[in-house]
Image 1 (cartoon, helix red, strand yellow):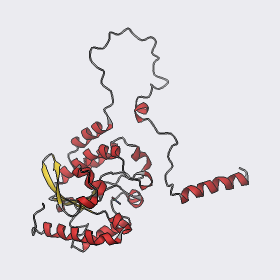
Image 2: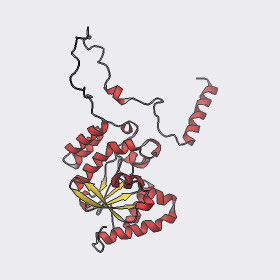
Image 3: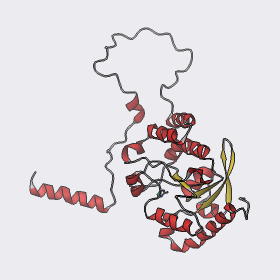
Image 4: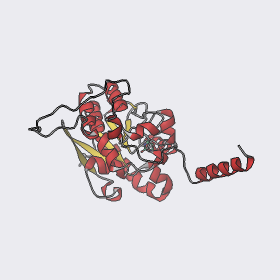
Length: 268
Ligand code: URA
Protein backbone atom coordinates (compact mmCIF):
# COMPACT_ATOMS: atom_id res chain seq x y z
CA UNK A 1 0.00 0.00 0.00
CA UNK A 2 1.26 3.46 -0.90
CA UNK A 3 2.53 5.45 2.09
CA UNK A 4 0.28 8.47 1.32
CA UNK A 5 -2.83 6.32 1.00
CA UNK A 6 -2.00 4.52 4.24
CA UNK A 7 -1.65 7.86 6.06
CA UNK A 8 -5.01 8.97 4.68
CA UNK A 9 -6.71 5.79 5.95
CA UNK A 10 -5.08 6.13 9.37
CA UNK A 11 -6.20 9.76 9.62
CA UNK A 12 -9.79 8.71 8.79
CA UNK A 13 -9.63 6.02 11.48
CA UNK A 14 -8.23 8.47 14.04
CA UNK A 15 -11.06 10.90 13.27
CA UNK A 16 -13.66 8.16 13.84
CA UNK A 17 -12.09 7.34 17.20
CA UNK A 18 -12.23 11.01 18.20
CA UNK A 19 -15.92 11.04 17.28
CA UNK A 20 -16.50 8.17 19.70
CA UNK A 21 -16.88 5.31 17.21
CA UNK A 22 -16.10 2.11 19.13
CA UNK A 23 -18.00 -0.58 17.23
CA UNK A 24 -17.58 -1.91 13.71
CA UNK A 25 -21.07 -2.31 12.25
CA UNK A 26 -22.18 -3.21 8.76
CA UNK A 27 -23.15 -0.28 6.53
CA UNK A 28 -26.57 -1.65 5.59
CA UNK A 29 -29.10 -2.92 8.17
CA UNK A 30 -29.43 -6.71 8.30
CA UNK A 31 -32.94 -8.05 7.63
CA UNK A 32 -32.94 -10.92 10.15
CA UNK A 33 -36.26 -12.32 8.95
CA UNK A 34 -34.77 -12.67 5.47
CA UNK A 35 -31.64 -14.27 6.93
CA UNK A 36 -33.76 -16.84 8.77
CA UNK A 37 -35.87 -17.61 5.72
CA UNK A 38 -32.73 -18.12 3.61
CA UNK A 39 -33.08 -20.44 0.57
CA UNK A 40 -31.94 -24.09 0.92
CA UNK A 41 -28.24 -24.86 0.65
CA UNK A 42 -26.92 -25.54 -2.89
CA UNK A 43 -26.81 -29.32 -2.43
CA UNK A 44 -30.48 -29.54 -1.44
CA UNK A 45 -32.55 -31.40 -4.08
CA UNK A 46 -33.84 -28.99 -6.74
CA UNK A 47 -37.51 -28.20 -6.77
CA UNK A 48 -38.64 -29.23 -10.27
CA UNK A 49 -42.12 -27.92 -10.63
CA UNK A 50 -44.57 -26.32 -8.27
CA UNK A 51 -47.47 -28.73 -7.70
CA UNK A 52 -50.91 -27.35 -8.28
CA UNK A 53 -52.36 -26.34 -4.94
CA UNK A 54 -55.84 -25.46 -3.91
CA UNK A 55 -56.18 -21.96 -2.47
CA UNK A 56 -55.50 -22.11 1.27
CA UNK A 57 -58.66 -22.16 3.31
CA UNK A 58 -56.97 -20.56 6.34
CA UNK A 59 -54.38 -17.77 6.50
CA UNK A 60 -50.82 -19.08 6.46
CA UNK A 61 -49.13 -18.41 9.79
CA UNK A 62 -45.51 -17.21 9.75
CA UNK A 63 -43.05 -20.02 10.45
CA UNK A 64 -40.98 -17.81 12.73
CA UNK A 65 -42.85 -16.13 15.61
CA UNK A 66 -42.16 -12.41 16.08
CA UNK A 67 -39.00 -11.92 18.20
CA UNK A 68 -40.88 -10.62 21.27
CA UNK A 69 -43.24 -13.64 21.27
CA UNK A 70 -40.29 -16.02 20.90
CA UNK A 71 -38.53 -14.22 23.77
CA UNK A 72 -41.61 -14.49 25.99
CA UNK A 73 -41.83 -18.24 25.32
CA UNK A 74 -38.11 -18.74 26.06
CA UNK A 75 -38.39 -16.68 29.26
CA UNK A 76 -41.48 -18.50 30.52
CA UNK A 77 -39.80 -21.88 30.10
CA UNK A 78 -36.83 -20.95 32.34
CA UNK A 79 -37.22 -22.61 35.75
CA UNK A 80 -34.17 -21.13 37.47
CA UNK A 81 -31.65 -18.33 37.06
CA UNK A 82 -29.11 -20.46 35.22
CA UNK A 83 -31.77 -21.54 32.70
CA UNK A 84 -32.90 -17.94 32.32
CA UNK A 85 -29.35 -16.81 31.58
CA UNK A 86 -29.02 -19.49 28.88
CA UNK A 87 -32.41 -18.51 27.43
CA UNK A 88 -31.30 -14.88 27.16
CA UNK A 89 -28.09 -15.95 25.45
CA UNK A 90 -30.21 -17.85 22.89
CA UNK A 91 -32.63 -15.01 22.12
CA UNK A 92 -31.98 -13.55 18.71
CA UNK A 93 -31.04 -9.85 18.93
CA UNK A 94 -28.69 -7.65 16.87
CA UNK A 95 -27.25 -6.44 20.20
CA UNK A 96 -25.86 -9.92 20.77
CA UNK A 97 -23.74 -9.55 17.62
CA UNK A 98 -22.05 -6.33 18.73
CA UNK A 99 -21.62 -7.03 22.47
CA UNK A 100 -18.72 -9.02 23.94
CA UNK A 101 -20.32 -10.58 27.00
CA UNK A 102 -23.82 -11.22 28.28
CA UNK A 103 -24.34 -9.18 31.46
CA UNK A 104 -26.86 -11.08 33.58
CA UNK A 105 -26.58 -10.10 37.25
CA UNK A 106 -24.41 -9.62 40.30
CA UNK A 107 -24.89 -9.63 44.06
CA UNK A 108 -27.07 -11.79 46.30
CA UNK A 109 -30.29 -13.05 44.69
CA UNK A 110 -31.77 -14.05 48.08
CA UNK A 111 -31.19 -10.61 49.65
CA UNK A 112 -34.77 -9.39 49.11
CA UNK A 113 -33.58 -6.22 47.33
CA UNK A 114 -33.26 -6.15 43.53
CA UNK A 115 -31.87 -3.11 41.68
CA UNK A 116 -32.55 -2.67 37.98
CA UNK A 117 -30.38 -0.41 35.82
CA UNK A 118 -30.52 0.44 32.14
CA UNK A 119 -27.92 -1.46 30.11
CA UNK A 120 -24.29 -2.54 30.36
CA UNK A 121 -21.58 -0.03 29.44
CA UNK A 122 -18.10 -0.77 28.10
CA UNK A 123 -16.67 -2.04 31.42
CA UNK A 124 -19.68 -4.26 32.10
CA UNK A 125 -19.50 -5.63 28.55
CA UNK A 126 -15.82 -6.45 29.00
CA UNK A 127 -16.28 -8.15 32.40
CA UNK A 128 -19.79 -9.62 32.00
CA UNK A 129 -21.06 -8.09 35.28
CA UNK A 130 -23.44 -5.16 35.84
CA UNK A 131 -22.33 -1.87 37.37
CA UNK A 132 -18.58 -2.46 37.53
CA UNK A 133 -17.53 0.83 35.86
CA UNK A 134 -17.38 4.30 37.41
CA UNK A 135 -21.15 4.62 37.83
CA UNK A 136 -21.22 1.20 39.50
CA UNK A 137 -18.48 2.28 41.89
CA UNK A 138 -20.52 5.36 42.81
CA UNK A 139 -23.59 3.14 43.29
CA UNK A 140 -21.65 0.86 45.64
CA UNK A 141 -20.45 3.86 47.68
CA UNK A 142 -23.96 5.33 47.87
CA UNK A 143 -25.44 2.04 49.04
CA UNK A 144 -22.60 1.50 51.51
CA UNK A 145 -23.62 4.82 53.10
CA UNK A 146 -26.93 3.19 54.11
CA UNK A 147 -25.23 -0.05 55.16
CA UNK A 148 -25.84 -2.11 52.00
CA UNK A 149 -23.14 -4.23 50.34
CA UNK A 150 -23.30 -5.97 46.95
CA UNK A 151 -21.78 -9.13 48.44
CA UNK A 152 -24.40 -9.26 51.21
CA UNK A 153 -27.63 -7.33 50.81
CA UNK A 154 -28.59 -6.55 47.25
CA UNK A 155 -28.86 -7.98 43.76
CA UNK A 156 -28.34 -6.12 40.47
CA UNK A 157 -29.44 -6.51 36.90
CA UNK A 158 -30.37 -4.32 33.90
CA UNK A 159 -33.26 -3.81 31.48
CA UNK A 160 -30.94 -4.96 28.64
CA UNK A 161 -28.48 -7.82 29.07
CA UNK A 162 -26.28 -6.73 26.14
CA UNK A 163 -24.44 -3.44 25.70
CA UNK A 164 -25.97 -1.17 23.04
CA UNK A 165 -23.21 -0.08 20.61
CA UNK A 166 -21.51 3.13 21.72
CA UNK A 167 -23.60 3.14 24.95
CA UNK A 168 -26.60 4.60 23.15
CA UNK A 169 -29.99 4.61 24.89
CA UNK A 170 -31.93 1.35 24.46
CA UNK A 171 -34.62 1.50 21.77
CA UNK A 172 -38.27 0.68 22.50
CA UNK A 173 -37.94 -2.47 20.37
CA UNK A 174 -34.95 -3.67 22.42
CA UNK A 175 -36.79 -3.00 25.68
CA UNK A 176 -39.88 -4.86 24.42
CA UNK A 177 -37.76 -7.81 23.37
CA UNK A 178 -35.98 -8.19 26.71
CA UNK A 179 -38.78 -7.20 29.10
CA UNK A 180 -40.23 -10.76 29.29
CA UNK A 181 -36.80 -12.00 30.44
CA UNK A 182 -36.59 -9.29 33.08
CA UNK A 183 -40.11 -10.06 34.33
CA UNK A 184 -39.17 -13.74 34.60
CA UNK A 185 -35.95 -12.69 36.37
CA UNK A 186 -38.02 -10.79 38.94
CA UNK A 187 -40.37 -13.78 39.30
CA UNK A 188 -37.49 -16.18 39.95
CA UNK A 189 -35.71 -13.88 42.42
CA UNK A 190 -38.94 -12.78 44.16
CA UNK A 191 -37.42 -9.76 45.97
CA UNK A 192 -39.33 -7.89 48.69
CA UNK A 193 -38.31 -4.53 47.18
CA UNK A 194 -37.23 -3.29 43.74
CA UNK A 195 -35.13 -0.20 43.05
CA UNK A 196 -35.40 1.24 39.54
CA UNK A 197 -32.23 3.11 38.63
CA UNK A 198 -32.91 5.89 36.13
CA UNK A 199 -35.59 6.82 33.66
CA UNK A 200 -35.24 3.91 31.22
CA UNK A 201 -35.71 1.35 33.99
CA UNK A 202 -38.50 3.27 35.75
CA UNK A 203 -40.48 3.97 32.57
CA UNK A 204 -40.16 0.39 31.27
CA UNK A 205 -41.25 -1.29 34.50
CA UNK A 206 -43.86 1.22 35.63
CA UNK A 207 -45.18 1.63 32.07
CA UNK A 208 -45.05 5.36 32.79
CA UNK A 209 -44.72 8.34 30.49
CA UNK A 210 -43.34 10.70 33.16
CA UNK A 211 -39.61 11.33 33.39
CA UNK A 212 -37.46 10.13 36.28
CA UNK A 213 -37.53 13.52 38.04
CA UNK A 214 -41.29 13.07 38.52
CA UNK A 215 -41.17 9.35 39.28
CA UNK A 216 -38.28 9.34 41.75
CA UNK A 217 -38.49 9.60 45.50
CA UNK A 218 -41.59 7.45 46.06
CA UNK A 219 -42.72 3.87 46.00
CA UNK A 220 -44.67 2.54 43.03
CA UNK A 221 -45.89 -0.93 42.21
CA UNK A 222 -44.58 -3.21 39.50
CA UNK A 223 -47.19 -5.69 38.35
CA UNK A 224 -45.86 -9.25 38.17
CA UNK A 225 -47.71 -12.54 37.47
CA UNK A 226 -47.57 -13.36 41.20
CA UNK A 227 -48.75 -9.96 42.39
CA UNK A 228 -47.56 -6.36 42.72
CA UNK A 229 -44.08 -5.59 44.05
CA UNK A 230 -43.04 -2.29 45.68
CA UNK A 231 -40.56 -0.40 43.51
CA UNK A 232 -38.65 2.76 44.39
CA UNK A 233 -37.63 4.92 41.43
CA UNK A 234 -34.42 6.90 41.83
CA UNK A 235 -31.76 8.71 39.80
CA UNK A 236 -29.21 6.73 37.82
CA UNK A 237 -25.63 6.93 39.21
CA UNK A 238 -24.33 7.93 35.75
CA UNK A 239 -26.64 10.96 35.90
CA UNK A 240 -25.31 11.78 39.38
CA UNK A 241 -21.76 11.73 38.01
CA UNK A 242 -22.78 14.33 35.42
CA UNK A 243 -25.00 16.32 37.82
CA UNK A 244 -23.46 16.26 41.31
CA UNK A 245 -26.12 18.72 42.59
CA UNK A 246 -28.71 15.95 42.18
CA UNK A 247 -26.95 13.82 44.83
CA UNK A 248 -29.12 15.54 47.43
CA UNK A 249 -32.27 13.97 45.91
CA UNK A 250 -30.53 10.62 45.56
CA UNK A 251 -29.57 10.74 49.25
CA UNK A 252 -33.17 11.41 50.24
CA UNK A 253 -34.26 8.37 48.11
CA UNK A 254 -31.63 6.22 49.83
CA UNK A 255 -32.89 7.23 53.25
CA UNK A 256 -36.42 6.30 52.19
CA UNK A 257 -35.10 2.92 51.00
CA UNK A 258 -33.29 2.32 54.31
CA UNK A 259 -36.33 3.26 56.39
CA UNK A 260 -38.57 1.01 54.27
CA UNK A 261 -36.20 -1.96 54.54
CA UNK A 262 -36.09 -1.44 58.29
CA UNK A 263 -39.89 -1.43 58.40
CA UNK A 264 -40.08 2.15 59.70
CA UNK A 265 -42.20 3.26 56.73
CA UNK A 266 -44.53 1.29 54.45
CA UNK A 267 -43.59 1.18 50.75
CA UNK A 268 -46.31 3.41 49.36
N1 URA B 1 -25.29 1.58 33.71
C1 URA B 1 -26.32 0.73 33.85
O1 URA B 1 -27.49 1.11 33.77
N2 URA B 1 -26.03 -0.55 34.06
C2 URA B 1 -24.80 -1.02 34.17
O2 URA B 1 -24.62 -2.22 34.39
C3 URA B 1 -23.74 -0.10 34.04
C4 URA B 1 -24.01 1.20 33.81
